[in-house]
Amino acid sequence: MAENKAAPFSGSLMVVGGGIAGLTTAIEAAEVGYEVFIVEKNPYLGGRVVQLNQYFPKLCPPTCGLEINFRRIKDNPRIKVFTLAEVEKVEGGPGSYTVKVRLNPRYVNENCTCCGACAEACQAELPNDFNFGLDKRKGAYLPFEMAFPARYVLSPQIIGTEDAKRCVEACRYGAIDLEMKAKTIDLNVGAIVWATGWEPYDASKIDNLGFGRYPNIITNMMLERLAAPNGPTGGKILRPSDNKEPQSVAFVQCAGSRDENHLPYCSYICCMASLKHATYIRERCPEAKVYIFYIDLRAPGYRYEKFYKKVKADQNVFFIKGKVAEVEQAADNHQITVVAENAVTGEKIRQTVDLVVLATGMQPTAKAAKLPAGDLKYTEDGFIVNDFVKGGMFAAGCANKPADVVSSNQNATGIALKAIQTLVRR
Image (cartoon, rainbow, N blue to C red; front, side, top):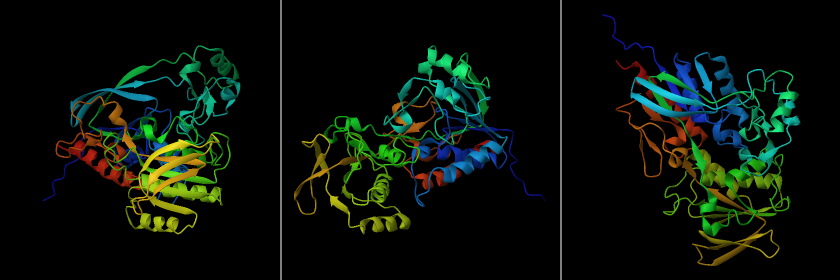
């Protein structure tokens, strides 16, 4: 007798979020034959990874993995991408959902060749959120060099201004469409994967650490952008107050993490991120001294432990076990004094440095605004809890728990399979 197998019925999968977890989920499902819709709120795919200079474990630039993924998406007719899109409502149950998606206007159509004429013509400069406000960008812009889709974007802030007219006049390809309006579409899918990612915790909420009051106190993601070749300083690590190379840098670990007043959990990646950032500084500023103030240092896995030992062997990197109590601006209005108690010796430390980097944790995007799907369950901290028995809707990557790029990829592959199992149930 022939073995009975459950043949897949006609079904589609929706992935909400186009970061590394969302891309992996979509590609894995599409390449085994399923139709996949990617819904991304930004005008580009790639999520937080595209903002990194390098990521573990090989210290690769974002182009290392994203270029291949973008090619796989472009070449796969089963994947449909919606950028500047938001899920407004989800109805139905496992195997049959109706999802209402709002598509916001880009004001640039498929005729765009990325020539950049619109940006050259545009005069308005707006805060650049891609670089966490460290610089400004034009009101017409390409999010980053290898952005997918490869099209410019017009900020809604210039619509109705002379700048918008200049963009139309400068474009030789008829790619600027100021009449674009927001619209809503309905999609029918059998399963939904929420890969909505994470946000850096708002460091200005941590009163004793001075972020927002002193310009030379920045966050770990801001340092990542400073170190990136396509960042605001072209890859040079410069302190914001005077654009000078820092000769001493202090890292404050668990900035807001493991703190019942902020994030009560460990964000998993912060220790390794600071160790990586220490290598950035030592490469670019060979004489600089690095001070890492920590509660516990966590290096999850053999490769990470090996990396930690390598950094620890650097004679210009100093590890101080102690929670930072406060920071003060020094008399020259540029340097910062970090105040902490050494938990080993009991000594009170006052270390003055040129730059302070706060290792802020990751907060799930869904924490700030719950997702428009009533069946989802969350932890107290806003992470989505997967219900594998019920199926239908799942969370992948950092929407489910704090994770690095490799762990997010592995998790997303498994979640793609779980979503497919919903589609083949009879």
